[in-house]
Image (cartoon, rainbow, N blue to C red; front, side, top):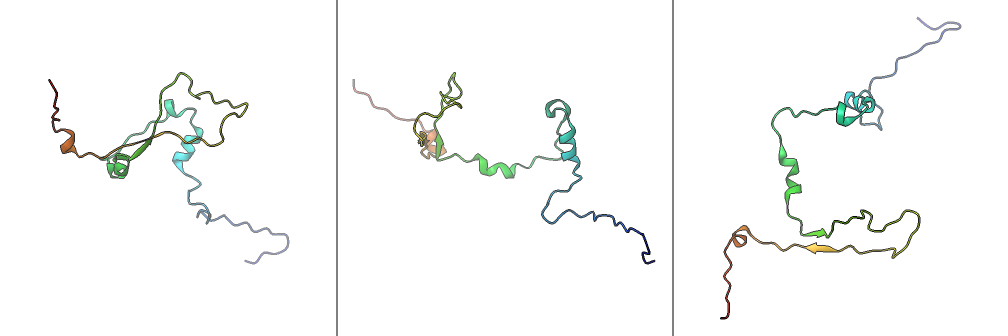
Length: 115
């Protein structure tokens, strides 16, 4: 039936997501996260099925180097947000770890003493 006179034709928008958006607009978990008053008291998570820890395997290797850090009563170590003072570039202290096999780590060490 062709439109005649003062007729308006309205079409329903497609249900497919936009080309630039990979997330669905009606994601149930995103809606729950936005509407919850507090994640700690109103949201719970439960694991279904066996845990697959293979994705964490790359995080379990011993690093060859780490940043040296200490505990302090001042969490900012004198850093102030109202003014700038000090060098613009600071090289942080690092510690390098040597590799040692498990066999040599648990072998008793022999020591000599002079009497």
